[in-house]
Length: 282
Ligand code: DHB
Ligand code: FE
Image 1 (cartoon, rainbow, N blue to C red):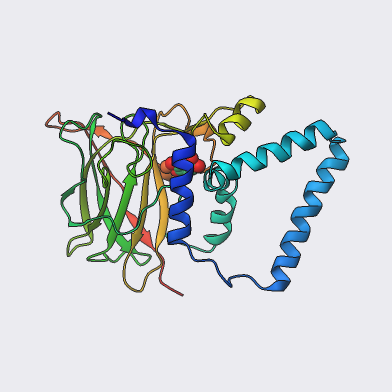
Image 2 (image 1 turned 30 degrees about the vertical axis):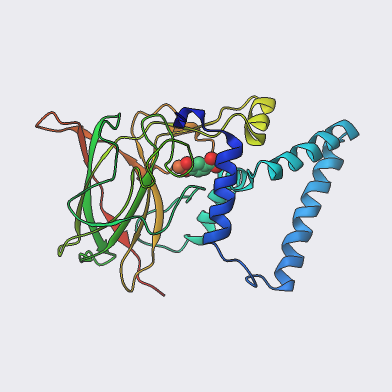
């Protein structure tokens, strides 16, 4: 049987590329003026590095060969979401007053099955990992609850793999869309995810090992929270004490996003409360 631990960079890269093409529509989004300004700065930045660092032909050819393999293995979404998305997110959300956002990453799938709170995420009968009750309230910036808010949640399993991007996992494993109750409150039963290692056997992995970096992201839960008349927030939550909180390869940790779960009174795993504050739509 094919199992998730046989996941390859090429397969998750190809999956992430296909999903990106399906879900994000970018045609016509950029004027000639902006393309000229941004592309000119990018080209100049690269040329400045070549001049300053006295880049050799061997280094130039290694770079060319690496770029070709990023494309061949479909790893552009992984590369960009790890090394670039965090600053795009900072710029996009600079004016928000509500909850902090952070990067979406390459593994979001829209339209996960909808359930009403209290809910248990779809998982295997013997899903490994510590059970986690994730609960809280969705409010506006004035502190008023937002009944029926939608909490889309997705995360890796106890081995660090995402359903639909690693083989052998049920389609919607550890993914769901949960509607908050009339008081804007939600309760979601899941398992605590494991730290995630970006695939090491592809082009991004080759760069990481050639540069002597590490490939880890701290364990995290991805979320998109939305309500009528409010701005959707895309965020992630992390866990206190995680080895990679301070050196996330994707630079996406913020202090406000670190959870400190406690043991449940009934001994059944851990629980944590986190409230989301949504900004009004402008
Ligand atoms: C990547 C994977 C993630 O799970 C994430 O949250 C961010 C980036 C990646 O492999 O690029
Ligand atoms: Fe992730």
